[in-house]
Amino acid sequence: MKKRRKRKKKIKLIIVVIIIVIVVLGFLYLNYEPLKLKYIGYTDNEIKIIFDKLGDNEIKKVLSSKYLENLVLVINDERYDYNKFDEYITMIEDGKTLDEIYYVEKENNDVIIEQEDNDVETKFKTAKYYIDANIDRYLNYLNENPNKNIDEVIRCVNSNIDYEFYTNVTATDMTEGHLILVNKYTKLDKNYIPNLVTMSNVYSYGNMQMEKTAYEYFKKMVDSAKDDGIKLYNISSYRSYDTQNYLYNNYVNSDGKKAADTFSARAGYSEHQTGLATDINTANSSDHFENTKEYKWLINNSYKYGFILRYPQGKEYITGYKFEPWHYRYVGLEVAKYIKEHNITFEEYHAYFIKNK
View 1 (cartoon, rainbow, N blue to C red):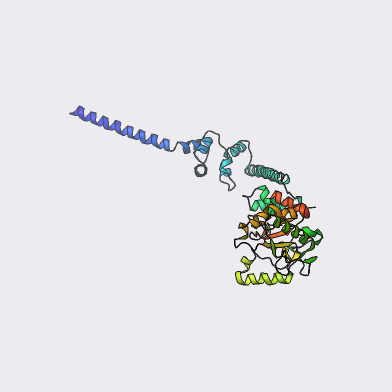
View 2 (view 1 turned 45 degrees about the vertical axis):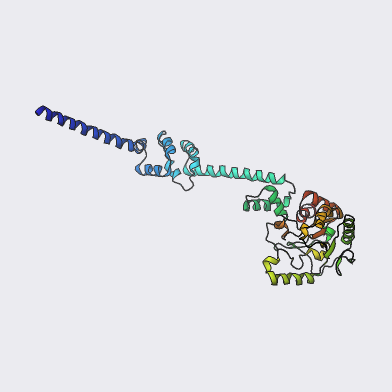
């Protein structure tokens, strides 16, 4: 009996010892990293910051290194970037101070940014329709619209879309002849009257007038269309400042100013005052004009007579007006051909080839 009791006591003692060993080993395992960090030379407060700021991989790198004097200062700084941990370690090992480390980082970032800016500038300068005087505006607009590509930025800035409509307004340059620009950024004098002639009823409804040269080419276009079985008529050409003011205010009263600005020009900002614009329609169809054979003929042939579709579909953000399939503007044969072949607006052409001379 006594031997059996002694054996039981011995077994219990062994079990207790095993449990103690397991507990001690477990404690050491759970506290291995903090203990090793303490052994390396880090204080309790530094160890806490290391575990708060670093991930497992970074902690392993710290454990495999000697004591890094400025490590905690670097990782506890608001400028700390975990993606650059290895760079920080290298600089700390080289003996750099906190200020030196973050100065070098800022310097490197500035170099990268400067290089990126130089790359972007190069892209602008090699792009079609680039205007050197607009480079700062290009860069600012790209910064505000990072999803736009280089060509889109140039198109928008050259057309003044980086400004709100009816702001940054300048007077129309009357020395430009048939290539004068009248839009939401360029304004005609209220007293301006072009060299007008009265249009024949063969080509126009009512008692209409048009700029002399534009009318000559309009007649040629209508006659040519007639030979192809197409009947075209002008329904609105020259309008005085006062007439446009009356029309615009009526639209504002009926539709509101915001809506009116999408389809009607304010007085002084209308191409109709130049006498170079014509609204064309046909008496033979009740369809929307864009669905007619007359519209298709004009799209394919109007440029041959110096006329362009002034407010095309898809370019509303540039022209400032809804698609107007009936509105054509005389710009001359050469310019109309270029605009047609390159699918650009008059705003884009004028900015690069006229204003940029």
